[in-house]
Image: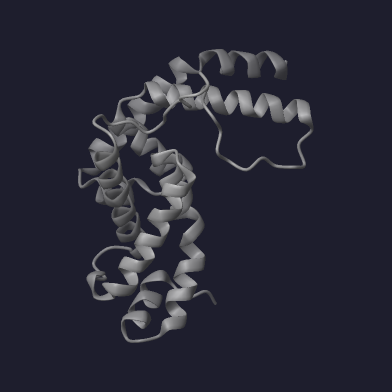
Length: 195
């Protein structure tokens, strides 16, 4: 039976170093993906993962079992990402264009089982989705990333953003509506290809 996150962190707080290893292997990839989508920079996302687990190692007592461990961890990741953005930029942005080329770059690792034509279509769709995300207000981007890419519950997002559950629901609804408008051409193409 898989041990719960909260049990693992409490065991780690009592001195069980193996519990931290389990937590690290469980969360390094999801936290990396979250930071990558926020910062759009692989090296910085790797730094965030390292910083989070160093913080957890040094300040293991800072987690209190009032919240789910994953909520606490994503809150720490969010704060570190925004600190990095504030230090790096004068403005707030999640996605940036490559300065050398006038296009967006997909950072996800492609599925090698796809044929080249399908991979090209997938990449074009990913770029279109990134451009649509780029048009959203910053808070709407963030809730979509947390909900759709990280799979967090509305309640967890509410705790991470420190706002009401109703506000999270409204933000996600508005973000989805805006994405539908910006991606209407993709939806139309998919319906056409399916018929």
